[in-house]
Picture 1 (spheres, rainbow, N blue to C red):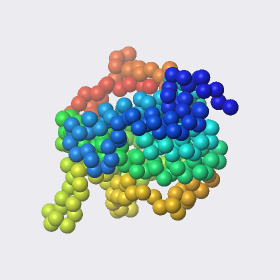
Picture 2 (picture 1 turned 135 degrees about the horizontal axis):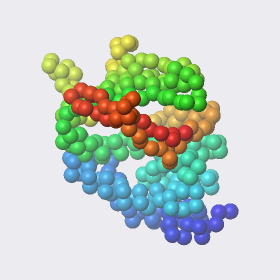
Picture 3 (picture 1 turned 180 degrees about the vertical axis):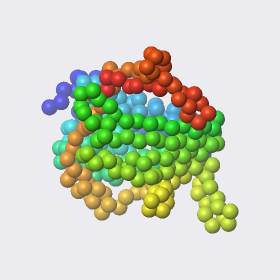
Picture 4 (picture 1 turned 45 degrees about the vertical axis):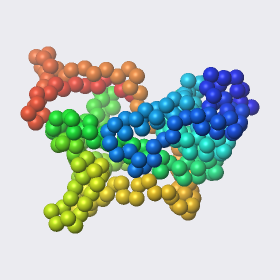
Length: 304
């Protein structure tokens, strides 16, 4: 039995711990309403919508409790699907992690709580789409204010302990362009399977200004996200169908697929990470030209 006194300072946690669904609904009824997809069109409206979302999150996504559990984590652990449904309808953030690094959905899958997992599957896509739509106008406006640039980000792994790690670990160079409120990123890293690096030249295009072909046969709205697979000569609209309510059969299929997945939590510890400038043989800081910019080179140390 959960000790409610641990959550006396957080009304949402306390209501979940007591399984007091009426109290939980009353708490949520006092909060502002989340903006729905299509209701936010300008930067000012986007800022206002995010402020409302932050006010809601401050109540239903609190983690200042033992185990850093959100009310959603607690509802899953107590196997309370009603509280999970109430919180998800209010816009609870299912991506937050507890002290052990687990998301609420991962806990539901691991404990084989199929009814709770189906609630997540039913509400997650519409909530994610609404979040994307309310943030989009602000993101586009902010991107337009940044001056245009081109940059490259290269990464690879080295180790004085593990031999040949540079040959078997993933590596890549990301090429990034920004013009106006449009954004392009090119990569060749498609995946990493054991000791095998999967390569595929891929371009991701964010069209903040939208796109209309010269013959008007193709028109994409502002905020479109396009993925181009060059070898396959395939173009995909990454947001096609986003936000649509999944059917019950799709929900059931997704839950069955999740239940067959082995849950594990890969983790990179960056608590002791340090950035140190690379030095040349004369003990001077190294630099190189990236486009028209002279850039310093740094190593990230103590990452495990």
